[in-house]
View 1 (tube, rainbow, N blue to C red):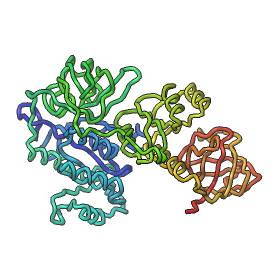
View 2 (view 1 turned 180 degrees about the vertical axis):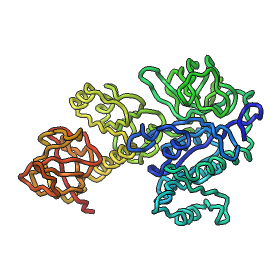
View 3 (view 1 turned 30 degrees about the horizontal axis):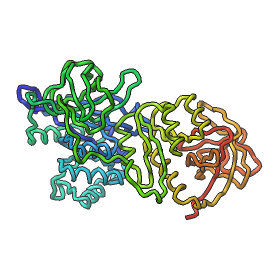
View 4 (view 1 turned 135 degrees about the horizontal axis):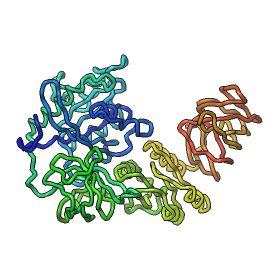
Length: 480
């Protein structure tokens, strides 16, 4: 298959979905020979990215494929909820060693709702611990029956490490696109979909879109639902300036007045927002039921949507936004008695000082699921303040120093004892601000397994915590 204008085909738009750590980004990195995985915290894809790659297979088949790399089901769901059919085919990435996980099930549910063709990429197939038959059995249970079991779902064993199965996967994508007869509708009115957006400190609002129909041109007056803009710059997936984008092309737009939402439809005329538009978390609620007030700032709109869709009913979302944490965010948190959660955005020393003065807690992380866990932990403490852990040790951070760039907490153990691997609360102003584990203990020059009351030690934690002098460390065991 070819995707040039002469044949009037457009490139297939492929959403890559799956559980974290199952190898989505590594697989795509292998396909397009870029190094996205190296730029991401903990190897986790933190926001949606879209790009187009030219495929030339050994069997002579060639064509363009547009990929959408998603952080999970939430942003994909956001597009579908807004009526934006951005995707033609889904590649569902499942680890051959771990099988179907919680997020995999969520992805499968969204794929079924969208009624999209799906190809399963069975990753990490080079490992001796692979269990392909177990995974296929799990897929049968989820009503995605593999072809070899009499179903219609292709399951392709792949390895990003040695390249096994990559050609077969790409060939199958192009074959599906041929069968679907994806026409190049360049002559139609403009129709595009926002797959990512952010507020850039130097460039202003930036939206990554994929053109479905028509031609998007430099200088066009455009509308992303209720947000207007004029295309001041178009950048392709390699960051190069271009003058126009045809159907199937992912492109970054500079020129919107505000940051548009993920899933927003883009056209040359105003569009009505779908009646099924995502309901903001600030819904009407019973004032007699306790809820945790929070403010969220995130790096891009995609992860903000994903975070919002991960919140429970026990959370009252006061305010959200993209970009660095500013004084207005701190004041909003203070006046609402809320806690502020900052995902992958800068928090300046000035803002931290303001937050300390206003007694506003700021939780920072570059990992989505750490932020979600932080919120859930605070909800539990709010709902049941009588929860009592079995305390095994207590201590105070009295110093900090670094060894080979690793930040070490100097801890004075005041009660009980602490052991490597213990779960601990990091407490500040009598509030838990982080839950973590003791990664290592050093007493003098010796590495030890335990430390008892009356002694000082150096301590490291995993996940990392931004501790301060005076913070309390509470080692505990769950009593329930």
